[in-house]
Image (cartoon, rainbow, N blue to C red; front, side, top):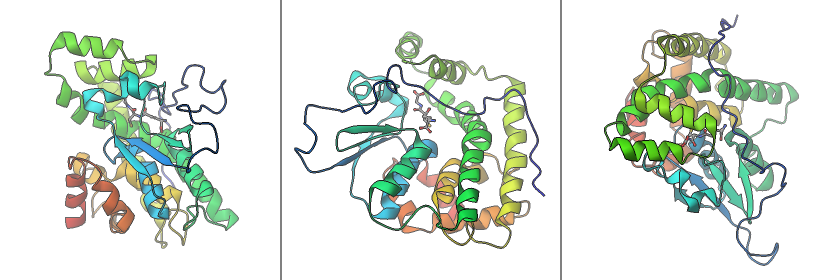
Length: 290
Ligand SMILES: N[C@@H](CCC(=O)N[C@@H](CS)C(=O)NCC(=O)O)C(=O)O
């Protein structure tokens, strides 16, 4: 029995629609004409954490060569003209494959899976495929926004808020989308409401329990095979035993903790975490130490 409570006030998803982007169809970056150079994959990411980690993990799991571009979110690199020329929404992650921009992290996993050789990240069994998609949606719409809100209020806000106030104000004004301006303001000025934070915690309490129950007697979220759902869920949730131990611990949610450690043990995950500065890899090490 999955005990997921219906909560009303928290945003269900972080969907940013870059101005004009979808209308333009394929956005080509740079001047190269199609077919004039070797197909290349460039991945723009911050720490291998949450959304930013998904394309990294997917490419590494499949053994796809790529160029990694570290965008320092806390230095507001994502709003600088150089990066806006790649992704006008000013969000991370993004990737450019042979000159074409691909964004929205969960669907980036699908793209990498279909566009390149390597072990499949989608189950071939229809029921497992359905489970994979159901859980990806759950991560994106239910627990993802809650984790993100707690993370922004606990880590991101405190890491930047003591900087020069005029600089911070100017940095917020440069953000291209209203949704991200609101998120940054709330993080910087500590104005997430008690009700919002309580709702995030309630979602995580029930959401982690639901995952724990759903894992049952199989190793992976969709069933017998490692899939995009494990990769996406891990990236969203691996910090929880440290960030919110009341929700995720060996006594309350042993199957969830065992699954986190199984994913953490994969070579692709260890390599991905090395692409960060260590801030998040440290949480990962605490997890492995158990
Ligand atoms: N739904 C998008 C969300 C992208 C997103 O909002 N990313 C956050 C980091 S997880 C970001 O770019 N924040 C930087 C900012 O808001 O300035 C995805 O999954 O790719």
